[in-house]
Length: 226
Image (cartoon, rainbow, N blue to C red; front, top):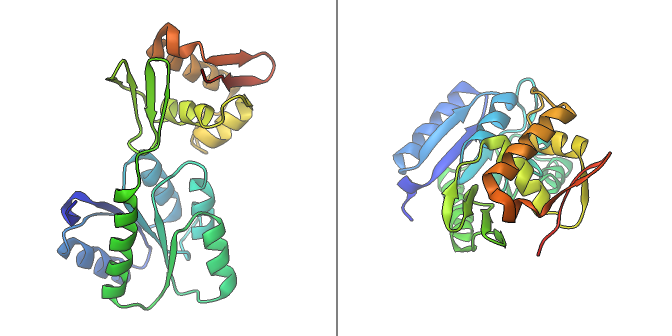
């Protein structure tokens, strides 16, 4: 895969540093998008498909640790932290929250590129995580759902709910858990909203595949694999 096939999200608030980073990566053939605050970074990463994320920790509003926490169970994209913080606690906390690498500022662009290529190579060589049952298949990395080998269109929130359930087979998941993990923090998180999403998911999956999603009265839902 060439660099031009790879899309990178940069979450950085310093205008000069961000401009240099975006310009340098673009010259290397990467498709780069920039978020200048934590809230926008969270939103973009969860709505769009990126091959890698570069994240600063000192962000306005929601800092890098809050961003990592928001992504922790909802984002499989590799994250490299770029930060002026050199202390061990910041490094360890970043790794514990899901970062795959940590590069202190200032750094050589050549070193960043080497780390990026290393992470992209690992990602390219890793097989897609696909969960199949009955006549359905869920591709967690491509964020796609197929039924009888035909792609079925799922909204962003529907996919989040379905993937959260199927990745935890046999476990009763409360409506509150689904809302907290699969729906946006600034959106409608009522129980009825979760129920509406699940109803649409069942309709799209059809009778065979949707029968695996069981309603647990007074609690929520459970995915029972074949």
